[in-house]
Image 1 (cartoon, rainbow over the protein chains, first blue to last red):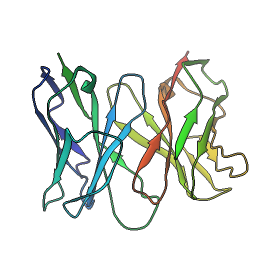
Image 2 (image 1 turned 30 degrees about the vertical axis):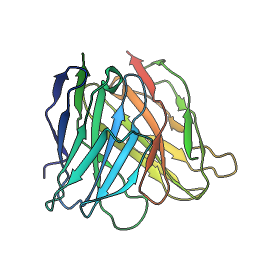
Image 3 (image 1 turned 180 degrees about the vertical axis):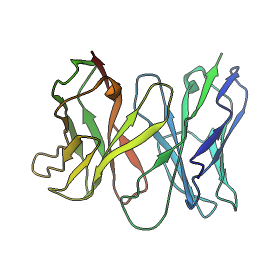
Length: 114
Length: 111
């Protein structure tokens, strides 16, 4: 059973560019969350998708947007990249049933903005 | 708002030493509490969880007890191994939507 898979693993962009990161959730999971993990910090919640809609959003600007497809996979888009967007971007999947559902994380996409 | 504060690192211990990593939380509701571990070059993995007051989560020799009176969820292990070297994150979730993570505590165990 494949876990959460993310692509690409590494990415280098320049300021002002746009980037798209992709995530396939663990089999049986219908909810995808995105987190940003800066170096030496804990993951920060960006947003969560369920039933192809953004269900909840953290404190991130509108430059960060996402999408969920009918097969539950998801994309994270970041426009007008800033140097401060350099971080590890983690996708996490879970099931929507019940509370305290644990998150399963992918290995992340390391984004470097030059 | 909800938040998690965990012990600053890094922590260096000798093999077989006792480990405690402190974690306290602030939450408006009744959150579930988690410890995640991140091994070098890997994503975060769930280590253990507790969903209500006085619950004890345990896994791989690690334990943590949900203490509502002190709003704490400290991670403990009686005898650490070199293979336990990793970064440990305390986290909370209210209703399972948004998770709040601490800043992480790096643990290095030396033989």
